[in-house]
Structures are given as C-alpha cells and as structure tokens.
Amino acid sequence: MLGGGFKGDRLKVNLRLVINRFKLLEKKKTELAQKARKEIADYLAAGKDERARIRVEHIIREDYLVEAMEILELYCDLLLARLGLITSMKEMDPGLQEAVSTLIWAAPRLQAEVNELRIVSDQLCAKYSKEYGKLCKTNQIGTVNERLMHKLSVEAPPKILVERYLIEIAKNYNVPYEPDAMVRPEVCPGEEADLIDVDNDKKFGGGGGGGGGFTAPAGAMPMPMPMPMPMPMPTAFNYPPPKGADQFNAPVGTYNNFQHPMGGGQPPHLPTSPPTYESVLALHLSDLTTALSQNSPLFPTHSPHRPLEETQPPLMTSTLTI
Image (cartoon, rainbow, N blue to C red; front, side, top):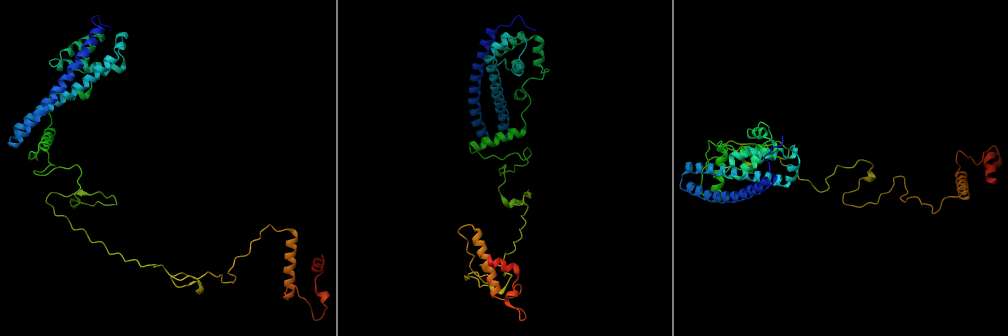
C-alpha cells in the first residue's frame, strides 16, 4: 500500500503553501463580497430586483467557497500536526480518514484557485495508493465531509436563501424592498416576518393554562374576549362564626383572656425538684384526710348504730398509724 513517489518533506511544504493561499483568498473574496452587497443595494433602490437576485446568487456561491476553504484549511493544519504519524505508519490512522479523503476529493474542484492543493492530493495518493485516491474522488469510500460537498456543489442556491439575502441587504443599507410572496408566503409585501409574534391581538387560546394560541389569518377581525365575572370584595375579618359554647363567642376586635369553663384559669404549679418518697406519702395522707373530713361515701366517718372506732376500716387505721 506504500507508494514509491511519496515524500514527506514535499507534502509538508505544500500543506503550508495551501494554508497561506487559502487565507489570502478568503480575505480577498470577503472584501469583494462586501462591495458586491453595496452594488446589490443600489439595484434594489433603482427597482432592478431581478438583476439583484442574479448578483445575490453569485455572492452566495462566493460565501460557500470561503466556508469550504476554511474547512480545508483546518484539515491541512491537522495533517501538518500529524505529519510524523503519516510518514512513520504504512497504514492510515483512523483519525485522518476524513481529512485525507476530503482533501483528495476537493483537489480537482479547487486546483484552479490553489494549484498546490493538487500536489498535496498527489502525495496523499502516492502514500495510500492510487486506488484509494480514485475512491475518494468519487466518494465511494463515504468519508468525505458532507458539509464541504454541499458548499462546493454546482447546484443553484435555493430561492428562499436568495430572498433572505436580499432582505438582509435591504435592511443593512436602509433600502425599501418588497419580498416575493410566492417565494416566502409567510412574508407579505410591506410587512416583516418575525420569528416570534408578540402581537397578542392576533392570537387566541393562549394564557397561563398552557393552551397555546393560534395565529389569526390576515384581515380577520379579532373576536371580543368575554368580560370576567366580578369577584366579591373581601371585608376585613370576614370569617365564619365559630362553633362552641357561648362563653367563647367574644366580639371581634376585643381581647378576652381565656378562662377554662371548669374553673381555674391558672396552670398547675410545676415542682422545682423531683418528688421523694416522703413527699408522696404526705400527699396521699393529706388527700385521705380531706376525703374523711368531707364525709366521702367511700369512707363514712360514723354510723348511728356503731361507734366511731368501728366505722373505720382496719387497713386505713393501720396506714394512719404508720
């Protein structure tokens, strides 16, 4: 697969020459395109729209050619950076397939502009065989950059692109221009086509609910939107009446200290230290004494038929004695 006519130094020199030629051509063609735009604006101002369209097609091709040269310039830089890999390896590195095949494919189409590109193509074919070069020139191998193929295509640019160029040129030079409604049906004469329509009068169905509006046809009268229902005005402290006892229905706007219905009003006193055995016993004795003094039915104090000593239970007597 190694060709006898390959020379690494010659490939290196011509790659650098191709890069320099591309840079000069890109700058030159860009300047000429700017001057041609001014000429097209003059045609539009004079009402020569058809002639302006023909000139725009030429500008589009020149812009495509500049973009193609930029792509090829990047591929030449890549081959220069990996020139040592190219010269040392007999087989092609997978990362170089697109760059090599694209340069070989573009050489016959740009050799009139850059003659050194043909020499680069011959060196690559000598390195990787002439059969490989033939496959690349017809793109049968399928690794040629598709974007570059589109930029160097001989087909006429689409009419929609020509119309956009004319609109932009007319805007930049403040020249009145009426777009062709047959080419761009979304552009009406004397109107601008906005990518985002911010005119709410032409759309219906939109809103916070996410329904998504639709664009009303030209000349259609907007439908009147229904008036919203009036909402009742809220009043201060307009709350439903509380439910409960009468003592809780205090007038609005007054302060009434809450009193528990069973009495009290003050929370129980919290002890400052944990209770001990003696304090618990004394508390029980105090409760028992209170119950006896109040004639509790559980502990009757006396009976008309028995003396006081006999009415007291033995267990409680022993507890009091303790």
